[in-house]
Amino acid sequence: MTAWLDCTGCGRRIACGPSFACPSCGGELSLGYDLQACRPAFARAWTGPGGIWARFGAVLPPCPAEAVVTLGEGGTPLVRSERLAARLGLRRLWFKLEGCNPTGSFKDRQMAVAMSMGRAWGRRRYATVSSGNVGVALSAYCARAGFEAHVWAAEDTAAAKLRQITVYGAQLYLAPAPTAATMDAYFALYTGLQAFAAQRGLVPMISARPVNPYMVEGSKTIAFEVAAELGGVPDEVFCCVGGGGCLGGVHKGFVELVGLGQAATVPRIHGGQRADHGHAPIDKVQQSPWRDGGYYLPLDGAWAWQSIRASNGRLYLVSVQDITRAQALLATEEGIFAEPQGAYAVAALLRAVEAGAVAADAGVVCVVTGAGLKDMQAVERFADVGIAPRPPIRVQGLGDAPLP
Image 1: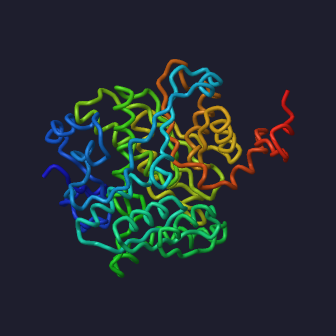
Image 2: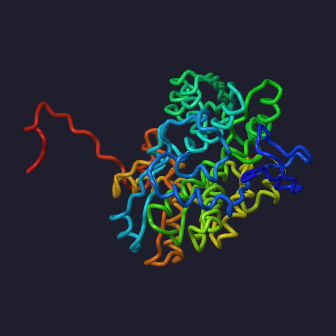
Image 3: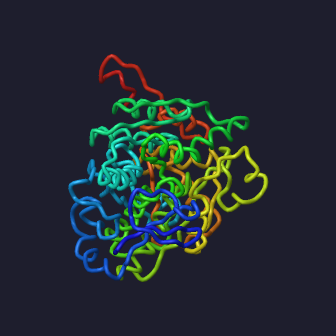
């Protein structure tokens, strides 16, 4: 076989199938591939036209073509920076615009892979716990396939995301917003979904390896597309750290490109993680006080931190103000409107440049993970960084405009 599941704990290898945890030790699973055997098929298709299955199917979980569920995800723009690059003193800076996916975030890539596998197994009922984007993607892809979708989200999730979830016909369940007092209960929604879903015949669709190892395979297609468009790998890649699966998946993609004979090196992978949102820093998840309760432990945090270290990258903890500044600069200087989490990577880049950690001639890619229309309320914070949108001017006609 050319693809299988490996347990990251005990090392057991099992065939690909509807397994979401190691049958021996209960550990998390990761997809592995015979990269030598996959080389010819991958080399023929990966720089060509088509969606993620047509281009990268040689190193995606084995799925019959008739089972694929797709909305045309992938193929997102890689836009070269002009004004922000000049501001930062960088000569080769690009933004990977994942907000151009069908539901507005990179989660569509993950959903397409995992739901296609579920369809191949004959499964029709799906569930997730989500901060927003996975719930939106699950709802849309279930609508596409005629499946049943159940989504748990915190009641303080951005209103636009909650509306997106319901517009596709999914059942939304609102849970109390996470606070210092309720974080353990909120985190238990994520850690308990796999067992809950197994008892009720649902497929758990949280985009983290400890819950569903197939989901994060979609993330690595970002790396494939970046390398295909640039004609090689960049020097530095900046990713968002939310749950950790995006960064871990992107690193996995570049590592596989080397194994497939399509790249000689892996870029340095850097992570931007929000520092003040009740989330444990991914480099300290096993330390007190974070491991002792009262914090959200990113489910793929250990994997993301391992990926950063393996690539000689760095973790940047960014504040709300850092993120808002990154959003505002992207919008006003590049015409790119990102949601807050979508700007984590750019916030990390700004910190890295301030620290003198990025060479002026380095090839740099920032993954902008989600579109700004998902969280319009965040724009109200632009004034906090001195880049407030201009207020409208009421007029009766063209001649009333105060123009010279």
